[in-house]
Amino acid sequence: MRHKIFFRSSLYPAGEQERRVREMFSQIAQRYVLMNHLMTAGQDIRWRRAAVRRAQIQPGATVLDLGTGTGDLVREVLRQVPSAWAIGADFTLTMMHAGQRFSPFLCTAADALHLPFAERTFDAVLSGFLMRNVSDLLRALEEQFRVLKPGGRIVILDTTRPPHNLLSPFIWLHMHLVIPLLGTLVTGSGSAYRYLSESTENFLNAEELAQKMEQIGFRKVGFQRLTFGVAAIHWGTK
Ligand SMILES: C[S@@+](CC[C@H](N)C(=O)[O-])C[C@H]1O[C@@H](n2cnc3c(N)ncnc32)[C@H](O)[C@@H]1O
Image 1: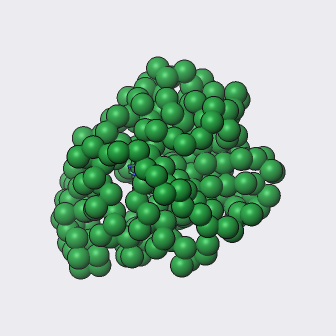
Image 2 (image 1 turned 90 degrees about the horizontal axis):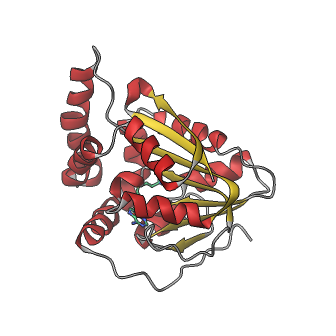
Image 3 (image 1 turned 60 degrees about the horizontal axis):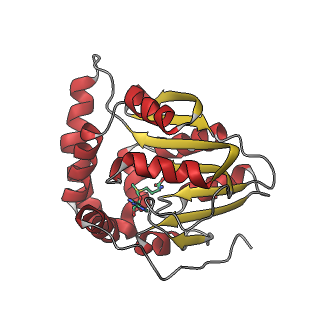
């Protein structure tokens, strides 16, 4: 069952920001995974492994990977817990389609702000590099809360503003010069990778995101900074 591929045909009508995000990810979909590995020097693999461990997924659990893109988190869930029932959901079909060439994964079209799942469906909801892109963060958190079973875990992996330290100028250079240049060379879209640094800077810092999760009702919220604080994993329980 978990290797079956299906797409739901209907997507909730999207606004201007959603349309721009979908267009951008459609443009870079074919080189997205390669570019991730290059710009993080392979750290993204380690980050996803750590994020899945934080979800504490039990054998046979139902798991949603929201904003699944090319499915890297779903694959990591199934690598760590082969008996889990895991599905990826995304509103950019090109990304999920591009990911099928690595290995087929179960996925569905869905908007994070209007999830097509019943209340209390999942034991865990994970997302990788999604939350910075959504136009209404609280709504996205509410939707994840709604589809989680009581006691279920939310895990959010995303880039974040690192605290200021001696490495700050180098991190700035990497984000604003190296990544957009590499993005232009590898994917042909420098703008998508300028958007990465801009959206990271405009996003909440790690403490603020934890507060928003508590505001929605998640308990036992915590976070861990990764690789000089350029990314973070947040977790919480319904
Ligand atoms: C940076 S990619 C992350 C892909 C994957 N999770 C990973 O770990 O590499 C962000 C993904 O979130 C999706 N996305 C952004 N906003 C979304 C929304 N409102 N609903 C569903 N998917 C969304 C994009 O289409 C894109 O595939």
